[in-house]
Length: 124
Image (tube, rainbow, N blue to C red):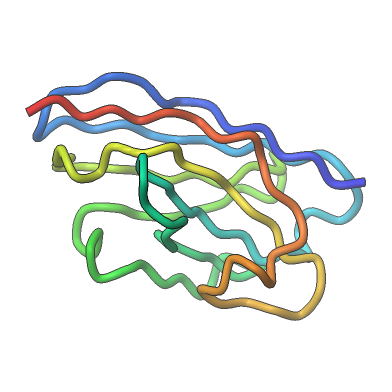
């Protein structure tokens, strides 16, 4: 059973930075594609970034391109989201997700496992 636990959220001023972590437990983390999604109050869950099992391929949403970076450390079973130049509109609950099968993409419905989320609040 795969379990995902996010951490690193908090309150930050606009222009600041945060690094989110997602620690995974379960078999063969290095085989999973991983992604970050976010959900703001009253809005649908939104794709943020993804990374392939090896870390060789990444993709980020246009809304965060140039500001957010996704990375992973398979030795630590952890995926990261470095968030710089934060804006008020980045305020949301951020979730990490794992794709145990072969799917790698932006469709939240096709990810198999989810963390509980971590709140990021950016004050303007």
